[in-house]
Image (cartoon, rainbow over all chains, first blue to last red):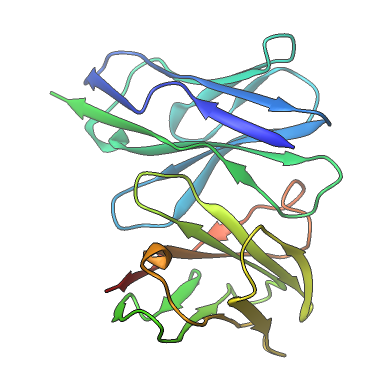
Length: 114
Length: 115
């Protein structure tokens, strides 16, 4: 079985400051990792994913994430946030032998203030 | 191009009733997945359909069922509604079966309230 833990339920951050959202996972089998963003009253949008190769993954809107196998982490970062980055962010995993069963964390609400 | 569309956007039901939620995938997408997102939690996988066949099922009771039509649209049915079924129901579509090699696109969801 897999589990995904997002360590912060809410992260307040000032505009143009950096932000890091933490995600840890546990799994008895190999997994792939994802970050999604959910803007108010919208569905989820894929930010980035790690399948293999370089452990530093770059995504859309200036986000990047680093896969750390030894620490079973997949933290999301952005060096300078905008007001428009206010949203809920979800970390998710999927077994490498699965087709479409994504397992999500509980989410981290990012609130960007001027 | 139109994205994933879901209907209705909101609905209110009472305990014991039955509900049908609808999803239209992006044109050409053959895979549809359903997720339940309870307030304050992450989405939970319910079903995946590909080419009209069920390809995955989450840990939900038999009160939950779904189907996919020849045009790849999908319906999610929930019988004997419970208060705990109140949630945002998300539909996602993709071209192929594997979400790892293909991007899933999510719809805006249907907000179900059970009184």
